[in-house]
Length: 249
Length: 287
Image 1 (spheres, helix red, strand yellow):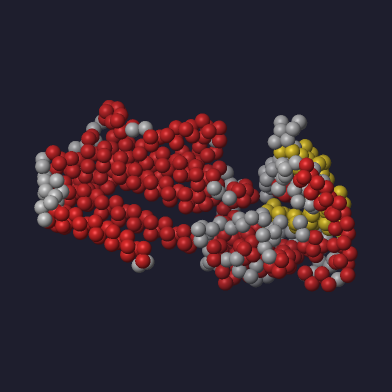
Image 2 (cartoon, each protein chain N blue to C red; image 1 turned 180 degrees about the vertical axis):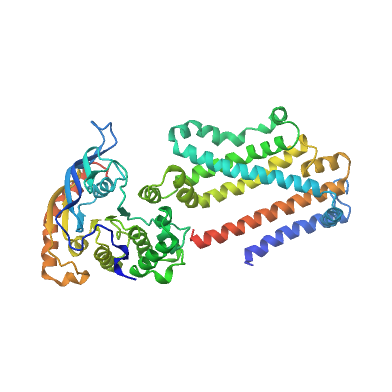
C-alpha cells in the first residue's frame, strides 16, 4: 500500500478507535451511540439469527431493480436526448437543477401513485438515480472523438447500433461516473423510502428499531449498510480501474 | 495464405483507363443558408479517378482537402454538383466498397487489435473462418501479428494507424480514401508507413486517394497528384509521376523525384502564400 493509503487507513482507524474509547469510557451514552465493536458483534449475531435476512434481501432487491432501471433507462434517455440537440437545450436547465428539488417532499404523491410497498420504493430509487445517469451519458457522448462517430458512418451503422457499439464503449469512463452516482443515489432513495413508506426492508427495520428504542439492532443495521455500500463501491472501483488501465485511459 | 485474399472481385492489377470515381462541379459551403453567407470550402471541383490508380491531393492548409475527401467518401453532401462512384451517384452516404482512414486515431480503445480489425467483418455477418483468414492476412501484411491480443493503448501512434488501415482493408474496399493518415506521425515512421500503403495498394488493387500536405509523400507514392488552390479549393493542376507500380520510398533517390517535388512546389508556393494572406485577413480558417 502507498504512503497515502496508510495515512488514509490511519485516519479511518483512528476515528473508529476514538469513538470506541468514547463509548467504552461512558463519555458517550449507549442510549446515543453504541461502541463500533459492539455494533459488529450485534450485527454478527443478527446475521447469524437470520432475523434480518428477509429485510436485507428485500432492500438489496429494491436497490438492484432501481439501479438497473436507472442505469439502462438513464443511458437510453441520455442517448436519445443527445441525438436531439434542440430538445436538449430546452430541458438542460431542468436536468441541471433536478437535484436541487427536494422531490422527496412529494412522497405522499408516490404513495398515491404506487401504493405502499415495493413499487413506490423502487420508483423513488429510480428517480434519484436516473438523472445522474442521464447527465453522465450526455457528458460522455459530448466527449466522444468525432473520428469515431465518422467511423460508425463508414460502417453504415444506424443510430442504435452506433450508440451501443461505438458511443457506449467510447463514453464508458463518463458512464462509470454516472453508475457510481446512481449506486449512491439508489441506496439513498431506496432506504429513505423504506423509512417512511414501506413495511419491510432495511430502512423500515432501522426505523422500527429506532421507534422501539432497540439501539443495538438499529446500529447493527446501520453498520451493515455502511459495510455493504463500501463493498459494492470497492468492487465497482476495482472493476473500473482494471478496465481503464487496460484501455489506457 | 495467398496474396489474393484481399483482392476485390472487380479489381485490375494495372491502373486501367476507366473512371472509378468522379466529382462533377462539386462545391461545398459550410454554414449560411446554402445560397448566401457561409464559408465556401470547395469551389466547383472536377476530379476523375481511374480504377486502381494512386491519386494524391495536395494543397495549402485550410484549402478544403479534407472537405474534398469527406464529399468523395459520402460523409458529407456536396452543396452543388455530383459525386459518382462506379457510375452511381452517391448521396451523402458512404457507398459500399469505400474504405476511409482518418488522420486522427480511430482505433477503438476498448477492443484488442484483432477485434478492431475484425469489427467491420463481424458487423457484415461474414462467417468466422473467412474473418479469421482475412484477419491473419491483414495482421501479417501490416506487421501486427505479434500484437493481435494487445490493446491500442499499448501501441505507438504508427502502429495504431496500421490497425486502422488493416481494419479498412479487410473489408476489401475497391476505393480507399486516406485523410492525412500519417500527419500525426514522425518523419521516419511516415516514410515506412508510405511504403506499407504502397504495399496495400499493390496487393489489393484498390483505387487509393491520399490527402496530404507533404510534398515528398505525394511525389513518392502517387501515380497522379492533384494540386489544390487556396480556399475555396479546387484542383488547379494535375501532375503524372510515371513511377513503376512496384516502388517504395527509395524512389526518392531517382532524379525525377526532385523534379516532381520542385514542380509541385512551384505551383503550391503561390497558393500557400495566398492561403497565408487569407489567414491574415480573416481568422475564420477551415481545417
